[in-house]
Image (cartoon, rainbow over all chains, first blue to last red; front, side):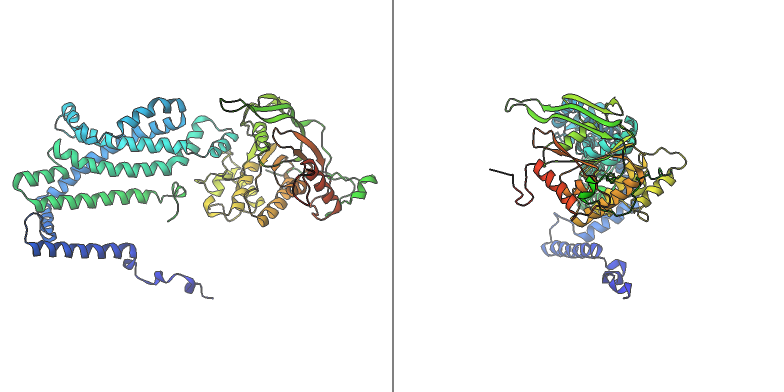
Length: 267
Length: 293
C-alpha cells in the first residue's frame, strides 16, 4: 500500500488553511465588520470604530511614538520579570525542598500575594519617584509571587521515586539539584513563568498610567487627558492586547523545547 | 565491560531439562548453580518495624522479627499478600527506610543508606522522563572513556537498540522497565533490589520480561532480591521463595525451587512448589480463599 495515501488529508492543503489560523481570523474579520457597522449605524462619538482606530495606529507609527512606547513598556517588563525570575525560582525551589523554610515563609507569601500590585503604587512613587524603577519594582512584585508559588509547588509535587533512584546512584547534593530537581520541576516552573508574564504585562500598563510619562499605559492616559483622543486610547488597548498575545506565544513555544515538553499532556 | 564467564553447572548441563520431582531423591544434581561461597551477602536478623501509635490508634507493627539470608549470586523472591510489608522490607534493605529494631547487614556491614553497589528497581516511573533512553542508562556512570561502550552493551542486552534517542513517554511500559533494568545494570551493582518491577505490565509483557530477566541474570550473575505478589512469577524466577504472612509480617516459609531454567509451568514439581506457597499463605489454589473456616 502506498504510504502517502495513509497520511491525513490535511497535509494536502496549503499551510495557511490550518484551522488554528483561519478560524480566529474569520472571527476577527466578522467582529471588525460588526464593530464598524454598529459605530456607523448609531453615529455616536463614545466609541471609535475600527477604521478610526486603524488611522490612530498609523498616526502613532508616523510620530514614532508606537515604537518608542512599546520599547519603553517591554523594557520595564523585561527587567521586572527577570528580577522576579532570579529571586522567585531559587526561593521557590528552596521553600519546596526544605519543609522548615516552607512552614516559616509560606504564610507571609500567602498574605502578600493577594495584595494587588496596584496598591503598591503610592509607595513605589514615594520610594523611587517618577522613574523606570517604580514600574520595574511593581512588575517585580506582581510576578515574583506566582513564580515562587509555582516553583514551590513543583518541588513538593516531585515524584519521590526520582530522588530515590538518583540517590541510589550515589550522587551528591549539587548533582541531585542539577540533574534531577531542576529538570524535574522545569515544566511546572515554566507554566508559572507564563502566568507571571501575563500578570506583569497587566501591571506595566497600570503602573505607567501613574508612575511615569512614557510607555503604552502612559499613551492611553495621555491620549485621553491631552485631547480626548479616544481613537488613540483604543489603538493603545489593541496594541497592548497583541503584544500580550505575542509574549504568551513566546513562552508557549518554550514549552515545546526538548527538556520540558515531557511535562505537559500532549494536546 | 565484559560479562563474567558462565559458571560451571555441574555434570548435567542438558539445556531445558526439567528436573522431575523423582529426580530429587535419586541424588542427581538438581540445584542449577551451587553458591560460590556460603558467606551471606544480605543478612537480616530480628528486624522489626513499628509505626508509633497516634492519639487515634495504637502502634502498627508492620514487620515482626524478620530473619533472612541471601547468598551471593542468588535469586531470591519474596512473596506475600498485598499490603503485607514486603515492599517496606525491601525499602529497609535498600537503605531508604530505617527499621525500628534489628540488623540489616550487606557484605557484613550495616546498611547506612542507599548505595550505588546495590541498585533498586521500582515498580513504575523510576526512569527520568526528561532524559533519553541513552541518557537514562548512562545516569549512574561517570563521564569516563568506555561509557558509551557500557551503555551500548546494556541497550542491546535489554533489546532497546534503536531506541536510544527516544524519551520514556514514547515507550511502552515494558520498554520503560527495560530502561530501568539497563540503567541499574550499567552501574555494575553487586545486588539488585526489584520491587514488583513487572507489576504494572500486562500479562503477555510480564511473561516476556520474566524470561528476559532470567536470561540477563544468567549472564550477569548479580544477587537479586525480587519482591512480588505473583506466586507464579516467584517460582519461575527465584532460586528460593520466601513467603511472608499478613501484617504484622514475618517470613513464614522458605521454599527452595531447585528447578532448571527456563522452567516449565506445567510440570508436577512446579505445581507442588506452588501449592506449598499457597498453603504457607493460608490459601487454597482451588478456591482462592483461606483454608478452613
